[in-house]
Length: 470
Image (cartoon, rainbow, N blue to C red; front, side, top):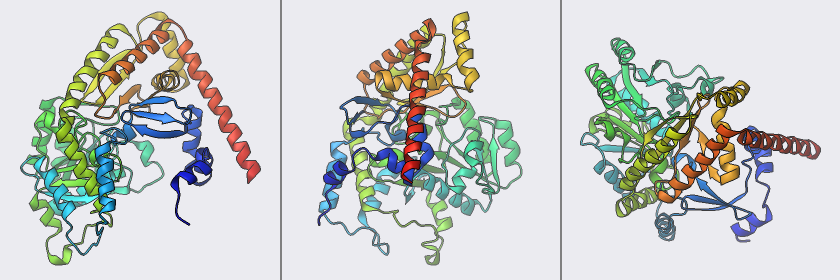
């Protein structure tokens, strides 16, 4: 009997949350239901998602930055269809296939002149793991320094250089020699480097957790300190790279020249997992130093032909449609329009980021009535205010956003890079209305409370049904 995807989806329609609660992550199911984000999405197109009721949602998460070209981009879909039709001899393993070489060539061409080789993998975390291994091999040193607030992934090596204690809790002991540096603290970095055992300093040019930035001069000082100590400078561009910030790599904003670059997320247009570590010939040869060591670092799916095709098609669209330039122009528009809101609304304290990676920070207002509402919200849980905006943005306006990290009042926007003035205007107008409510009355807070109460009831009902069926 042939496999019929359409029939399967129709037969099991509506079982999403029940299946996740039973077989996958039950806590995620509770979170989504409590927030009232439990929708049955049917399809995605461009910057929008559509649910089973035909409701349209502006997706300003884009799969955490994966769908740089929007969902269902016709060029990527066609490229993958061509690849499947061609019956490519995929992952022969004892082989040197053409497509990985072509994608590596295209990435090297877009990188600084010291970047000469590419090591493919399946994810951003895997690219970071490779960066750690290659840095240690190339320097003969063991320690890796990283910034507080950093997010480099959740596999064991990457988790060791993650700046969040919440993510690390319960998984220790982690990689020895991982050393946290206060964000941008040159003196602290120099003190660690003096020991002579630091292999590398890994950084996000713009931090994903909070969209935190440093001035150009401080970045150059940090890089110079690393060079002077004989360590390697690694730029984690998993989220910021491939056009996200209005340059192909975010480090280009600051004139940096990393020894190692990691990329992933946007590279395949969202269809096939792919990651890559880019570095020099010298560093690669420190690992692949002889024929006996030709496979000393590898992964089964590293040269997956579908991932390579998707990557090549994505870069082709970037060139043909001027995606990087468009992201830069939209970054200017985001800051301009959101800056106008900051002038009008006392809750909105800062707008930062580059290109289509924007952080909107909220803080304590000055007027008495607004301060009272702020205290009421924040007394329930630290940094709850931003969550009271994310929920009605979704329910009232159909806009999907996220809080940038735990315990911070920052909303992060990661729209598809194709998002334009229409999407910017709709979000800004919606946030304007919502902040006006927050300053004039408690309607927005009541809306949030009702949503959470309904979500709690749904969660309780689901748990009861699960007990009865077990």
